[in-house]
Amino acid sequence: MNNLSSKYNLEERTAFFSEKIIDLCKKSPNTFITIPIVNQLIRAGTSIGANYCEANGASSRKDFKNKIYICKKRVKKLSTG
Image 1 (cartoon, rainbow, N blue to C red):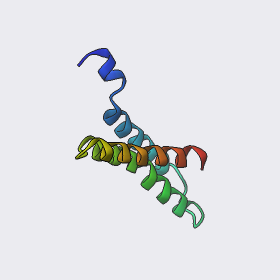
Image 2: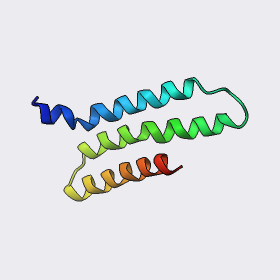
Image 3: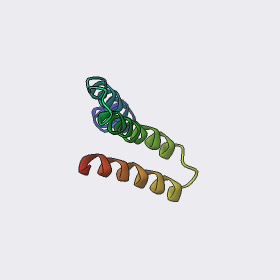
Image 4: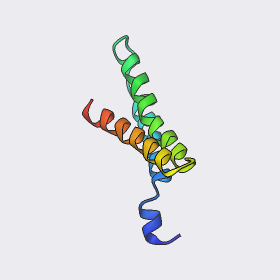
């Protein structure tokens, strides 16, 4: 694998992102307010990698674009709240 491929390895980067989301959520206190927020954060944060892996196995270019669009929506949702 060349430097460019390793720099943009989205599968690896999304897995790392998911791990960091989980690490962050483990540090959160368990209160009736934080439990649903942490639950949603984990589901949204880890789904990005899962959706990216799905996109890599897409059956067509159109299917790939659709699945990448889903990844982008999840990232946007996480970054804007």
